[in-house]
Image 1 (cartoon, rainbow, N blue to C red):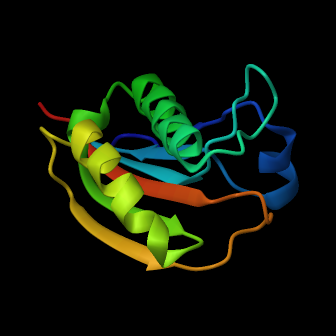
Image 2: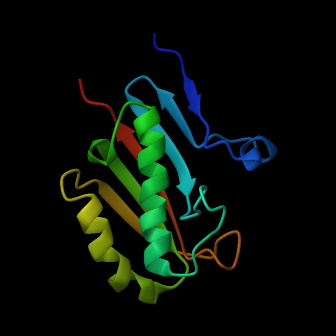
Image 3: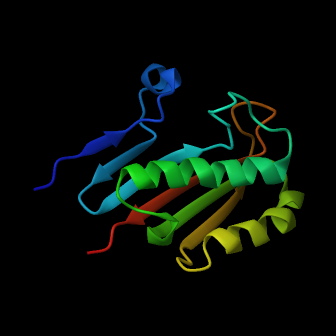
Length: 128
């Protein structure tokens, strides 16, 4: 049996809140809800499009540490804070998931901080 492995983004908040950026369990990779926070600059962009690309960059980084990529994603949940954002972000989703075409859900809800516009959670399965 393969041991469960945790992947950290290095954020101190993970320990405080008791979670991991991602958990690898066998071939499955569960990536926590991820915002577009730019860890290199230590800022959250104001722009929805920039936040969306940041979400995917952060998710791709976690998946890479697990030996996977966005092409391995089988399930995605998008949370946006305004239903009007859908038309803006759908083409971005389609570009990142052109190959994977995962099962998807879009939820409109509030997020932890008012400046957050989008959060994305994925489940991936490594191939072979």
